[in-house]
Length: 207
Image 1 (cartoon, rainbow, N blue to C red):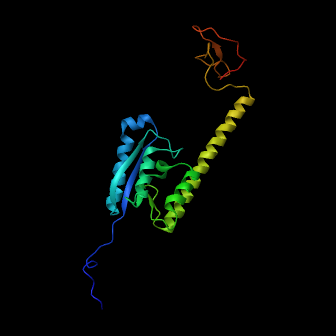
Image 2 (cartoon, rainbow, N blue to C red; image 1 turned 60 degrees about the vertical axis):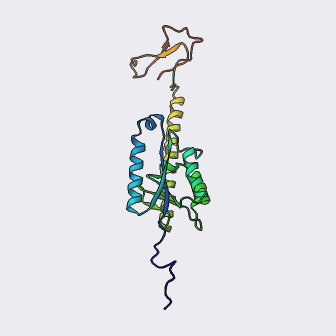
Image 3 (spheres, one colour; image 1 turned 90 degrees about the vertical axis):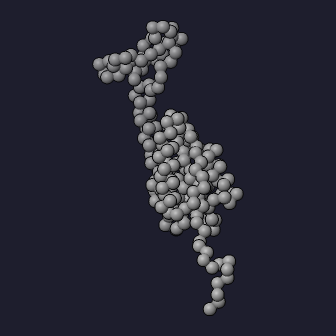
């Protein structure tokens, strides 16, 4: 048997290098910092338990996941391009993106088979180091997208029904205000504002 060379003797596999990604969607959450702190604690704990070297945690405070144009996620992806890390770790997928289209772009560009870039989601138990983890990732994101579209459809149907019944929604125009108390039918009426002169009489409607 060949004796191991000094370079290989006693070596251990290189630990996975990762960057954590944290996002809060509103300015209020960003200012309070509660959500940010909770996400960072969970990411650090997960990396310790999985023996992952966490190099940094980048934060997008006050950004929505509807658009991938965020400075924090760009910085995290740039770290991958520079080969400083191997994986990105998030608490939940919705911190990364809520769009199946954006997810597909990220998967194809950074996480597809043959590329060393990995995605780990703590709460969703997703680890794209395995085929099962990649499958679960796609299923969860598809369900989330369906749920948002279903909510949007139901909201639009409700708005269309109000319009069909002649019921106005939204704020009152200049010079008008909604009555504080509802009428006998349980609806608030649009009445002239005592301090502002209405520009024109609106069509009869109620809220």
